[in-house]
Image 1 (spheres, rainbow, N blue to C red):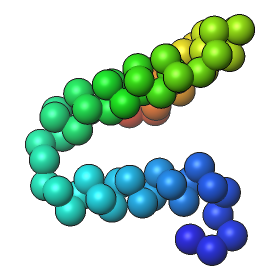
Image 2 (image 1 turned 180 degrees about the vertical axis):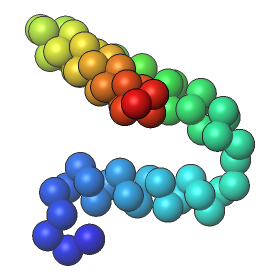
Image 3 (image 1 turned 135 degrees about the horizontal axis):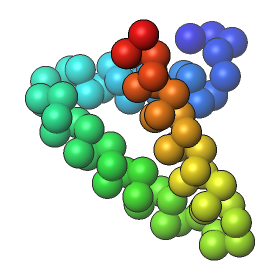
Length: 69
């Protein structure tokens, strides 16, 4: 992943680790909700937290639209 943006490289590493753990997809998604909530709660409550909450919602909505078309 040389040259990839840091967030993409991190996502690929997390995906690889999760695949190696062999958990059911539903459990991975449940865990990701907890991870997102924990990470959001660590952000300052000065608008940054709400910005990222809305961004996550929008990204998830966009990805579900891609799956239905």
